[in-house]
Image 1: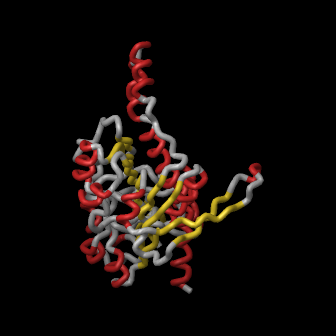
Image 2: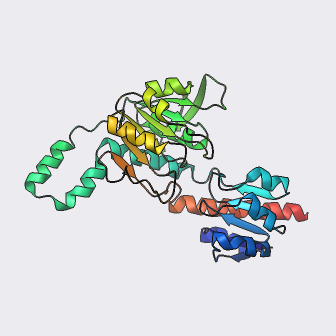
Image 3: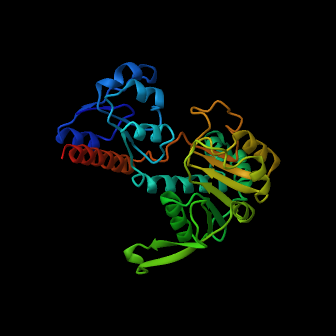
Length: 323
């Protein structure tokens, strides 16, 4: 079996595949050349860069498996592939911790003006240092504030667990959960001798979440309509904060900029964008916007887990198919 790893994989995953007898090609093929070359392979592994759409699938009848390192599958025509008898796999659990922790990186950065202070600290004399300190003195604690989580899957649960541990009140909305509340287990470090507690997170309507939350964080797949646009921003608290480490395209960036300009949003933290790299840079270099270049799963631990999980799923699939 020959596998094209088009967007990279952790060496641990590559090693597992090679030890299982697969021929692994780590040389990425440009998107425009894939139609002519992908049929040489039995499987393709991608991240978010490579698109596997219906036209590519039709051009490559030899293709048996599409693997996505990560959670989202919006760059793959999943149902079309399955209708053609092609297996589609991903690694939904591997990057959960890393993405959830980045959410709080952006929350803390926006609440304590870290984007601005980090940018200006290198060029400060004594007077500017004092002024910068004064300008940054109106930071806000997360403790006691309400965090609204839209999309309450694995990452949403992990975000809730961390938030509860930080003393935040958490509410959530998920159109696929028909419960009044969902338990979230908070596990403390053994040295604290507190064991594990279970906290019920109240499930609310999207409108109620927007009205009640000091901070709103998004955790759902992309590819559909905006989750937040002008009407949703108008429902939010004045001075609330938006965090998007989910998918580009779930936030109307033009409406977000208008909300930042009006003060409806006091700040935003973004790891993903409607177009990547971003074309609209109107929210760049703002003191109240924290940005990162789609690095939610970009930790060494997450990459190792993704590579291992992806390799094991591929090995299991083809061994089962042969059996």
